[in-house]
Length: 142
Image (tube, rainbow, N blue to C red; front, side, top):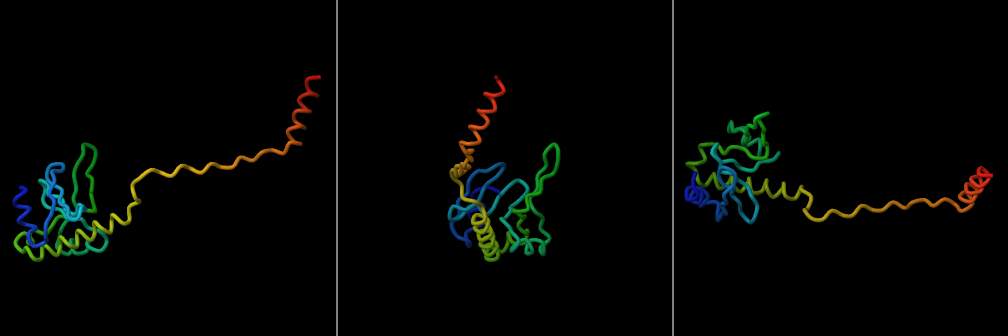
């Protein structure tokens, strides 16, 4: 899928930003990435709210293979092929994907500097105990 095709595809959804990413494009709205267009197809962001819709359509989550294993990315699911011909329903799915991406963003901890660990108060030994040890050490030397 090329950039112009994607712009046309999301026309009923509204303006999207399309950026080169991996072997395809990342698609975002309001600064939030909600879709991926890769060689393998078009994938929308999904979560526990929207995954049942993808499952009902027979869609599968995005996956890729490394030399050691196949990695399943359950947060992006393949868009059902029938939606490429129904721009209004595709826009509904895109809104749901954007909402899933927004929910995921809220769940993540904000990026930033980590708080410095609190210093533990060290217990100081009473002076008497220290004096006793010193006294014992002096007696041991005699």
